[in-house]
Image (cartoon, rainbow, N blue to C red):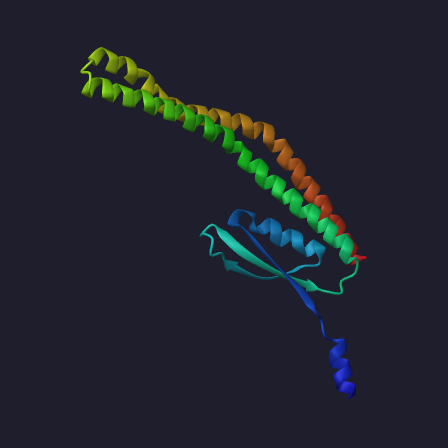
Length: 178
């Protein structure tokens, strides 16, 4: 009977968490979650795509300061989500602008082709083809320029979010240690 009591005292009940993320952000989660009491239990490829992975974590259900650690964990997750959104915003407006101009260029080229085939108007074809080709060349240059400008404005915000995440993780680590 004494052996049964000892084994039940050593029992640890775990709670589990699974995070699906991209491979380039895998380290951020693997380094951050242990600050809130989670232990990395495994990494498996995701069924979503080749660039994503499943990170599996576990932690003791009876961990001290669980409510406060969960609050800090939510701050960490919000900070990581904000970093993802900021990184995505670097290319979103550049992509939309480039696609719009490319589609306008395509419309001019389509008009040029129709002017030649159906109306046999070579001067109109040339007049429509020039902005069409410009509309196909210009998007690449605009994309690069807009992305560079947006990256310059977003980079300090991303660095600020990394600092915030670092502070949250250090608070969680301090709670676990003390």
